[in-house]
Length: 118
Image 1 (spheres, helix red, strand yellow):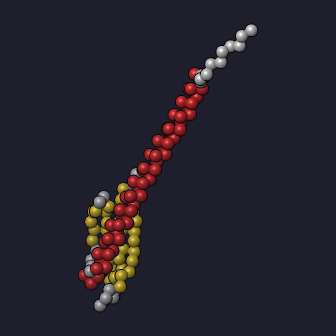
Image 2 (tube, one colour; image 1 turned 60 degrees about the horizontal axis):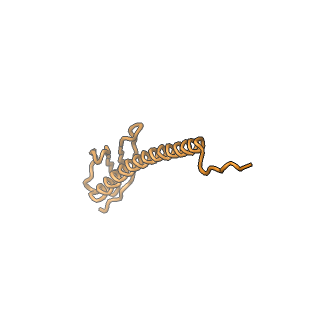
Image 3 (spheres, rainbow, N blue to C red; image 1 turned 90 degrees about the vertical axis):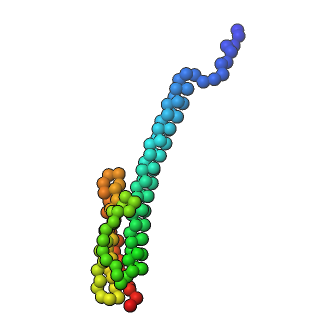
C-alpha cells in the first residue's frame, strides 16, 4: 500500500484566521495612534497657552513701573491679565489664558508677585 503524498502549505481556514488576527491588530494600532495624536495636539495647545502667559509676565516684569492690565489673542489663545500695585516696590500679576480643547474651552490662571527696582 502506498502512502498518500504529503501536501505542504496552509489550509484556507489557517489563512483566514491569520488575516483576521492581523486585521484586529492593525485596527488596534490605528485606534491607539489616533488617541495619541489627539493627546499630543491637546498638549501642544496647553504648552502654547503656558508660553503666552510666561511671555506676558516677563513683559510686565521688564516694564514693572508702567505695567497695566489688558487682553489679547495670540495663537488661538485668549490672554487676560491684571496688574495690582500693593506698593511702589511690588506688583501682583494675575494672568488667565483660555484655549480650545477637543471637548471644551480650558482656562488656566497664573499668579505671581514681581519686585520692582526703585
